[in-house]
Image (cartoon, rainbow, N blue to C red; front, top):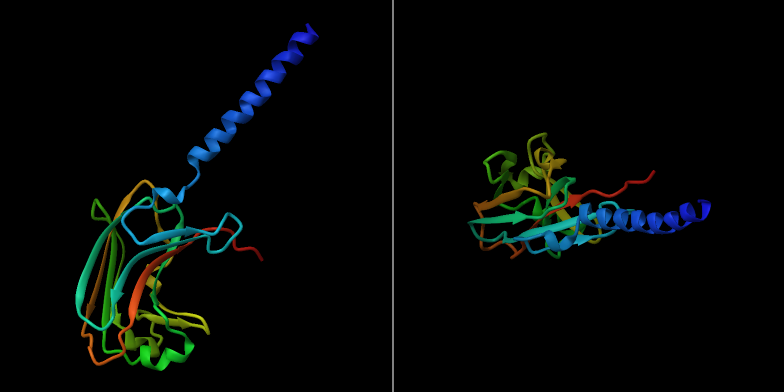
Length: 189
């Protein structure tokens, strides 16, 4: 009888382990689920921010509206930022002197808005509560807005993203913005 119980355990334990591994893989996020944007990068479970989804690249020197539909984003609380391609802290004055206004909205396909903001990029100099904020370092520069932080994203929903540039001046340096959602992971102390 004890011999039979031991043999059963030799079958049950590996089978249970296999079921756990398959279930874990099935319910975890996979970057191949992302559709509709430029790319997504998963830095790993112990990274912060873990996910970086590039949605759209938009020219800052000409007016236009850019719409896209994205799906397969990770179920995380994500922040929106508009990264300025090839810009750094040294470009702060030029970026906060831009005549362009940028409006962005993110809504799910049922029309529920997650984030809707608009404003002049030059208002970043004022650091007002309802204006774009310029964050920069020696290696990058990005605009963000307090109304588009901690967005409750679900991997099972599809989102419509609209970015509108208006009041652009073709005489200003030809820079591009990349709309990025980033977040998730573990922020360790």
